[in-house]
Amino acid sequence: MADMDPVLRERPLPAAADLFGDLLEVEAAPARARPKLFTYLPGLAITTLAALAAAWLGDHYHAPLMLMGLLIGLAFNFLNADTRLHAGLGFASKTLLRWGIVLVGLQVTIWEIAALGWPSFVAIGVMIVVVMSVGTLASRALGMGAAFGTLAGGSVAICGASAALALSSVLGEKRVNQAQLTLVLVAVSAASALAMSTYPVLSTLLGLSPHAAGFLLGASIHDVAQALGAGYSLGEVQGQTAAIVKLTRVALLAPTLLLVTLTLPKDGTEKKGAPPVPWFIVAFLLLTLLNSVLTLPTQVAAAAKAGTTALLLLAVVATGIRSPMNLLLKQGWRASMPVVAATATSFLLALGAAKLLF
Image 1: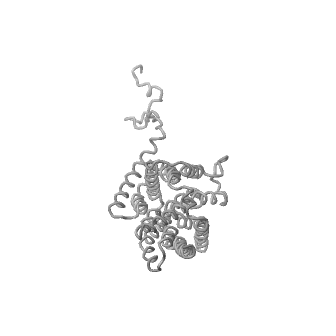
Image 2: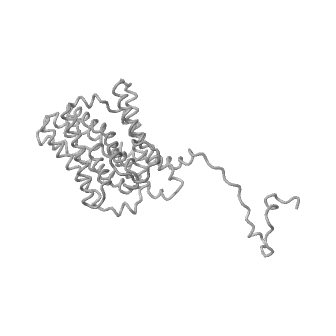
């Protein structure tokens, strides 16, 4: 007995019928808890690989980057069954998203907005409110709820997939689930790609002046890159006007998020003592103010733009992987109707404003 293993000595001997010790279970030593960082690595690694694949497809086939990221994420959806990936996927779809929104603040300035003049600024603000309202009303009419309509209308009114992701972080998963967010991302990305292809042709057929055409494109196309691409495809003046108008819409993202945060009823997920305004909205506004009062090096602006694109792409991919496909397939065609209604309203309002202002 003296030579017996200490673990076995402390346990009772096996029963007489247990000839081969089958009933004797030796407890394994408890595994050491891994640092929190390591719990994120599997999910982040998968998200990064999928994002790189989406970037390659977007670059080689000139396809919308966010749409490619979403489709690649959905293709990897089966990996969501592995619980080891959940921490990293959640980190990418929430925390990285918020940092991406913060970096947008380094791409707009107060002076760019002021250069439009107050009539144009007021027109853009009114369009955002009306387009979001149309999305909300269409969603409620279809029985899908006001929160889903706010998400759909806001994504069209401001900056496409980026706005959809930002609004989803404010609305919370109790109001808008992952399947609904995914459907909005698909619909708004497809609508933006269609708008980029058709709106420049329509502006030419309608005989709009260069400034009016630029305003129309900047005020109605959802994605930033696609709005600028459509503008510069017509000319320098159209491109510059579209850029200023589009960046003004982007700058209004933070006030819109703040308004949504303060007006929506509480859903019970807020932490006790949490600030009424999310930290990333405050950081967005501070960086916008900093970019307005200081002349930052061009390298900083370029790095901020690249960082924003990378972080938002990772968030989109992670959202696709996390999406519950059973709920996604149940939504049907009705789920895209708020985006369609908001897109049509956005174009008509932008066209009317362009003719009145220029």
